[in-house]
Length: 320
Ligand code: AN0
Ligand code: CP
Image 1 (cartoon, protein in one colour):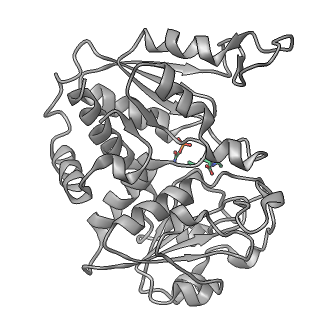
Image 2 (cartoon, helix red, strand yellow):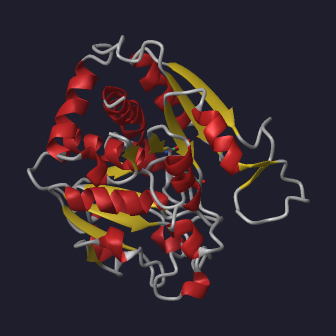
Image 3 (cartoon, rainbow, N blue to C red):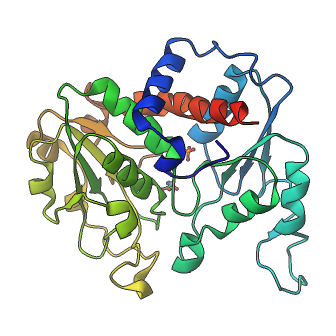
């Protein structure tokens, strides 16, 4: 595997899930595969889970790991071509990328959305430059529009906890004080469409996700109706994707606290498991009692980030 951005990059999804299951049974079974190989993790934004779980996965495979926080100690990077660099940016990404590639065998990139220019974000301009100029396999650690390591971990978690062959999974928008990217809901939707689940998306009007990710999902604007009989409730905030009104791209259109997942919302479900990728704001996205309930899966899904990362890194090592 040379890139990991979308569910298709894994090939057969059932096979990938079996591989994840095997790795979870013995995560040190391939601890020499990465000997003398180096993973470079590049962060343009903050992270707790991705940073720790991806490093741990690489260490399980015997790799060396270098982490670069671009905003903490590196030169400020210019990302646009054709500009006169007379401002505060000392180095261009087009030199920095091949230099970084020369020190490693695999690259993980966290790049986040700017949330001002929809076409720039959805073209994945920054990570595509890594793919093109690094000469190394590149995987997403959350990019402008996708977070596949999270969605893969979420699917592993659903597989582990489902009690019916085809569970009902509901992705629900929930309020947040700041504008957040669509990467998590985009990838979650993409992966649920590829999985054997009954998938429903609910959000206020104006928050329609890009059709390429919505796929064949049922979109229901009445949140309570959407949640009825759900086996898994996956809450997440996202800013306006700009699908219906491009001028609203990246904006916070609603802070309606009626969408916060509380006991009354969970009461209409089939004793659903609560899920969220974390970090989560209590009182905004979800109430304390729901996230602390025994049915909450927020900790197991975060733990499965180590497993999803290990499948991806293992496959990339095998393709070197
Ligand atoms: C980020 C987001 O919504 O994309 C990271 C989630 C994994 N969340 C925040 O910035 C709070
Ligand atoms: N879920 C997730 O990716 O968390 P971090 O932003 O802390 O890495």
